[in-house]
Image (cartoon, rainbow, N blue to C red; front, side, top):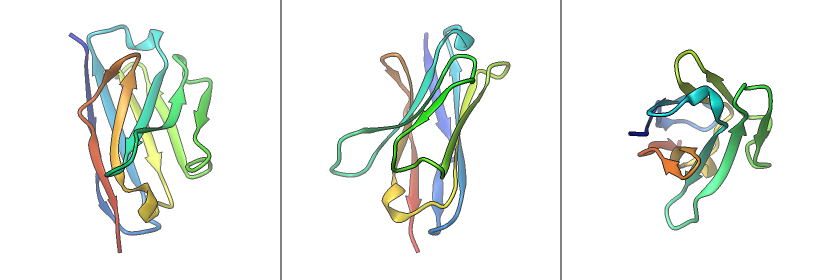
Length: 112
């Protein structure tokens, strides 16, 4: 059974940093690309970042490029999202995604 479990969210001041983790199980993690999405209250879920199966290729939404870094550790079946220079507009529930499967999400709140 596929399971994705996000962690690492919390409350942070503007300009601060957080690192999110997504622990995956139930599939051959190293064979697949992974994605991070986020959803703010009242807004549609939006794609944030993606990473290829090997970690060689990464892509980012324009809103987070140069601030967020997606990475993975295939030995640990885990994908990460390092978030720097956080701003209030980054406040959202953050989800990792494998194909059509979503994790439960982890809340990130950026507020002064």
